[in-house]
Length: 228
Image (cartoon, rainbow, N blue to C red):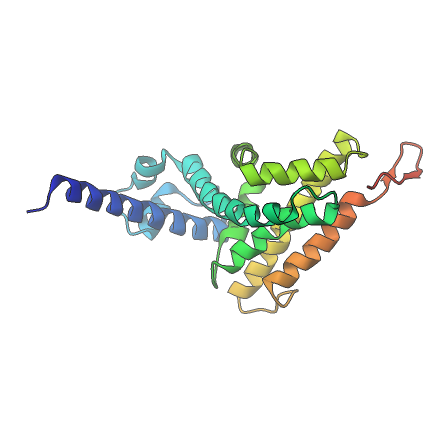
């Protein structure tokens, strides 16, 4: 006879497995076809769920499903980021903080194996206005990402808030799209631009340090050196 506690545990395990199957199938389908082209029914079928309302039952709909996938990966990235933040302490070197921003992403993607779908899925999310707003607001409250952005802000205090925001948006696109292209090349058996995820992190760090510390063109067309 199964005790009540064991029965509840088994049911919780089945629910967790079902949620994971739905998230994995959705991430792949969204990465391959885009958010708007994939229905909740298709996701449920790909996850082996006979109930056509499985996505709604477990996640409340597609927005909740997208958020759950991004939270899962985002929390994993932030755990990796903690190591970098702890190592650099109170550094005033912009490269240290850029490394803490950039490197956890390729490290996490490299741990997913081949093929993986998350980088390409993230591109789809970040080009959808509604979904981007949902996941961005959630991401900005993560402890170690917040610490990293604060550290970068201290290093770049000579830049105006507008320039910092513009360059931060550029940096985010650079990270997401560069990682997605590498992920795609690996999944398709092609030749990635960089030999490893570590080299991808090196290249992104170099590029984003340059982006953030570049001179600013004034309204009169002059270059103003405002880097640290």
